[in-house]
Image (cartoon, rainbow over all chains, first blue to last red; front, side):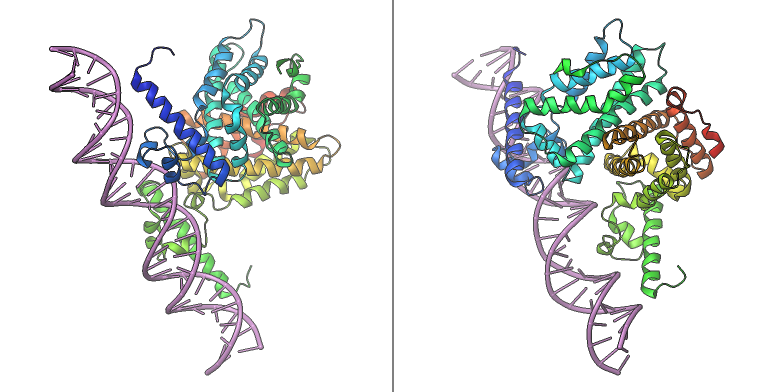
Length: 213
Length: 213
DNA sequence: AGTTATATTTCACTGGACGCAATTTTGCAA
DNA sequence: TTGCAAAATTGCGTCCAGTGAAATATAACT
């Protein structure tokens, strides 16, 4: 966006200031230990102003959730002619894991860590994931009206995401999420592969995810 | 338990009083509109005492979540000799939907309604569901060490529950959850059937869930 | 009855969220 | 450059969930 009024640019800057201040303090002093007053002070803004940028304290950890959904449905829209629903879902997952910076960056690792320690954060994460899932299912059904009823689309999408989430949780129970963005992204793709290979074997068309890394 | 100290009996009574007061007020005035002070007053107890029974306001809606998990892992333990992982999972879902009063009763319908309107409630519900999923996956892997790695168990369980949850959400988007417990339970089983039939066709052994109704 | 253990109440306090009015900042036009 | 309307920001104040600690009450045990 080259054309932005000065107002919008400044707003973006303070928004970014809030985000960096928040993640910074979260990393150094912990999530619950950091108050909104602290963040406001660090961002040189009033506490009240934070709520004009983010709806809640938790949302400071999910600043780009819309973009992630957007990437996924974009991948669905830009499907290859020969692909079936399963392939499309798969590609939507991997590309959305790559395009949006939401899965990389230092905020991603922080979020993964906080998800397992702060209940409120986990709850918000699951909510976001669920909303994304509903949206994806809706678009998938719209794109394959012949092959998928809305119900089948919901079931298939839920199964996919559920499988990946389940394996991800198990995986990060014993293994710390890597700090390095590149490594983190590779790990996520590997876990996706682990979660979904049984599928790809039995149902339709083998495909190696590692080609996407 | 016929033999219970007076203390335990009284404690159970007040616990029940809190629950009925809470669900009552939630139904009549709404969740966010009802304060903990209201509930405390209705239960004739101090607000502070509520927290010695329940950890949070949301948890007033999930009083028996442990029992639900217990029923599920009980069903896994008491599996039929010939059943594979898929059948066991299926039976665990249906029986846990029947044994625990958590899915029936007027609190279940209320909860389903609030899950779609109050974000905090939805978050808590997803958290409970996720915890249950992890527990179930762990037990499933323990019971089928030959057929399932811990990872496959996590993926399979996540896929199952994810599919059911996704379809459930879609279903209740247009259709109000029925108030009548019997009808509600039947609906849940029907939705489960809808979500999982594609599976049962392709993978292993057809089975009609309606025999469980 | 007296003693110990466990609930419950009371009170004071923190922190997140939000409504509202006053005030400052900014974009833009005369 | 100045003036003005719109938008952003601030500084209150309020509400409510949740916590800590001390005081009080109540059951259990001997």
